Image (cartoon, rainbow, N blue to C red; front, side, top):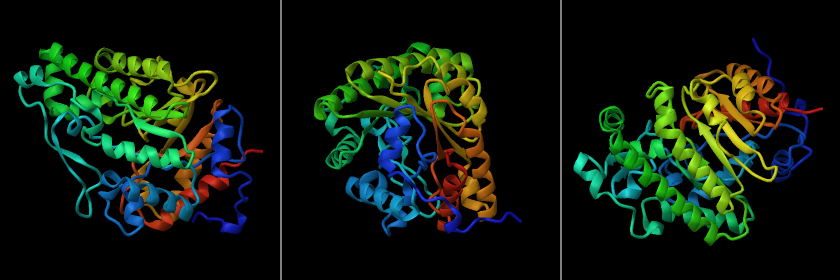
Length: 366
């Protein structure tokens, strides 16, 4: 059986989390790898609130992120986002997670159901009142108040379009009516660029990081050719124009099985003036391959499978984390330990603690 060291055998931190991230972003090696769990509903549940509060209540969400990171000893600032973005913001309806196994918001009524609906769809009259945008804004104000980097969800356009109309319909239109698919993608692009412009106006002179990436780009749903035609151009435009506006960098989550798409993600800009982007991959993409393709321009994050943290024994969590860290820490622009996707709400606390401890133990730099 794997022997897990006691806490006193883990070297103590020599930097605070903000110091560690600042060193990482400067292109140097901190005392150890940062540990940035992809974590949402777990934090509010951990604090005695409802899972849905992390998506609907910015104050509770922000406090829960801070309290949970303090409790478990991981790094990273609070972040707001959700995979179903795009439907609610264009007039559809979503359902907040309820029940034991509900993880995140889901679209219950799509704003587009027929081809005729596409022509009637338009940008929200007031972007600051659209869907989750008021929640994003309140969350960003809390980040600003504490001097943290400000994050705002910037896509992806492709996943967001798949939340505006049912994904299966979008996939059919890509083949039979590509002009309709491009129209929806263009509207999402315009929405996110309007959001970027607004955030730069609201938080002048501040470090602003765009948070994007989505699961609908996965090669289990679309081909590499479709990714290049329908997803990549819109992502490229958003990154370039938001950085032109004054964004500091992008944090892109390459969600799901995107091995075929990986070389084309390298075409995007992620940061300027020496600031690297941040690029995370799910467990379906090998970390060594991600480093080969993206490691020269981005900090690489990933990619311990959330189900391993949820259902594995502490010894199994220790071993899979060790494997990820030893693969990742050689990345030339830096590496941060992250789960491959959202940490499950029902994850045993000791497993999350073990995951963090393993990251600290194996993630030391000489």
